[in-house]
Length: 304
Image 1 (tube, rainbow, N blue to C red):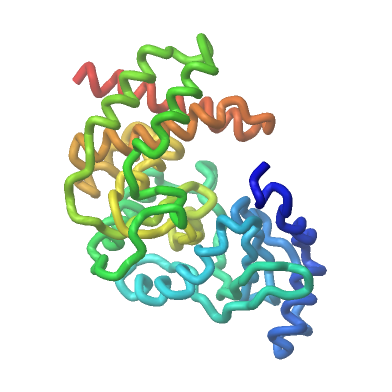
Image 2 (tube, rainbow, N blue to C red; image 1 turned 180 degrees about the vertical axis):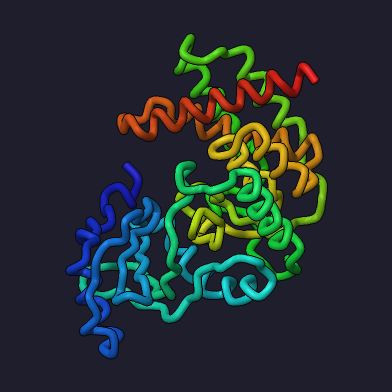
């Protein structure tokens, strides 16, 4: 038995509005009278709560997400001036307390709805706007930025990080997926290695991290997985939310080469394969959608 197995860390307290009220009252008494309530889409890596009408409190849900707190505090103010859409504005950083063992953050609230398809007025315009945002992010000077690694869940790093996990998932799923085909797609992605200089990436470009108002994309949130490296991970949205003309517009606006597109496809394939067996039926359905989109788009690309 390892030493850390003999002395496991104490369990986290329940991360709820009551804990947030205690933390705020103890460390930021000027905000102690503001109401606290969970946000509608609170996230998984972090738990997020409204603090009054103009702020949010964001708390890591596990130790592995703690490095993201300081990273966002440090880099969001650097990135924001070069970006064409709203991004979170850090206002304060909290310390461990009230039984909660991690640092936490206070940000300015950004009004908007998460980018479900039924909330997007014009998918192609949405895709073009998003591509323009990512292009602007990639143009920001990367020197000194955090290189892809554990803090980014290895987004921006080589897909080989997840090679073993992906192949085990293919074997486990058996005839639920076309094993030979998904292996071919995966190996094509692995072979398309990144050889360019590092650029900034967001790391989690998903519908829940994109905000719309009146059907238009206005903000990108949750930069916890951001860093500098290979931007292919940011292409995953092309298969998880976009399709057809909107996918084509997204790729054309970003001017994505075949190798980077193949790696982006690989990121989605990995995610779909490892989550297909998720006991949550919603997440399992999302995984099936990812895989179906990858397989269909790959087949179309081969025919062209």
